[in-house]
Image 1 (cartoon, rainbow, N blue to C red):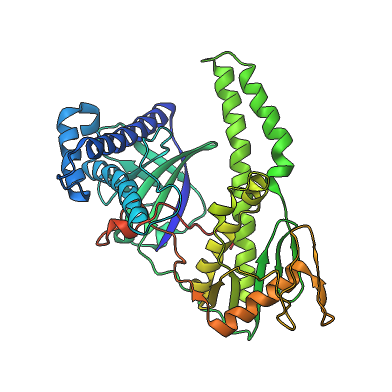
Image 2 (cartoon, helix red, strand yellow; image 1 turned 90 degrees about the horizontal axis):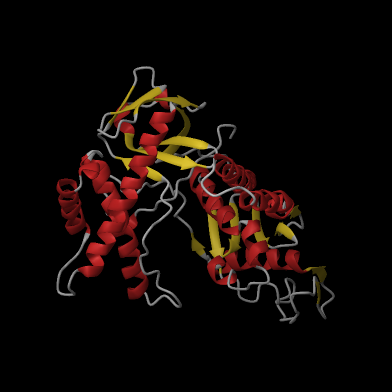
Length: 401
């Protein structure tokens, strides 16, 4: 399963129609959540019940009926996705907050299934045939969707971002590119001083995209409040502010993507720590730096390319990887500020280098937990698959890769 993304070029009235469709999706999702909350406990509310309720909404509200019927179902299933995630967290007794579903106020996408749209024969234009008035949109991009049959397109999604509108195609195509074996093995220890340090002693610099862009972001944010509310100048100032955040987000993703691809191409076994980044973000002193490092994105791309290239990616428990000596396995307790590992056996290494060696050793001795969740390419729903197993994130490789 792969996702191809094009930028959309259209007229102002078409952009307004897309915004209206996105607001309709948000309305349907929130109404489904309210229906679930107000239902009595003995009533069984599942995905099918919410789909039936979406039909009631079509009969009750004319602007909902204008949206394609399968897009309405996909909107209702977004609500069920939040509900099912809450149920799963409760059943697994997840510590802390269980993620009770919240009403959405910043939806930015509308998803169509296999109806409600049609591709131009040149596959450089797409036409939406429902009554929202979106019409025909021009697709800008270098992807090769023209080489894939239309039957392989399972979902089409329109996304609004800070720099414009995009159209995403979810294709039912197997993404495998087996690479030759190199015989190399590597352990990776992510950090804040360096983006990662491997078991060979190489330390990849931490780019710190947010820290570098922070002065410009703060300046753009101050400019918003200097404009009058409701004015066009305030709207333009907000657009400039959102573009700066969007640039940082893209820089992080591209950086993690390229590094993960290079690591998976040059090694047969990749070992890394099984970190709970969400728990680490509770440290308010380091939360911004941890988010800026984008460890989770790096791990996601490692798993993706490992599966694509036929390599092995193993996540090992992070306990005592920095405290144990990589030579004699003696525990040498040290604070976070101590950056050099010094052991009685004579081993003197950088703290992160020592941890990377321990991570590789644990992966080879215990076997770790091979990661198979390498393709986060699902949309809200996939044909013939259960909704609980779906994810809303989309893996998109760069055209240059």
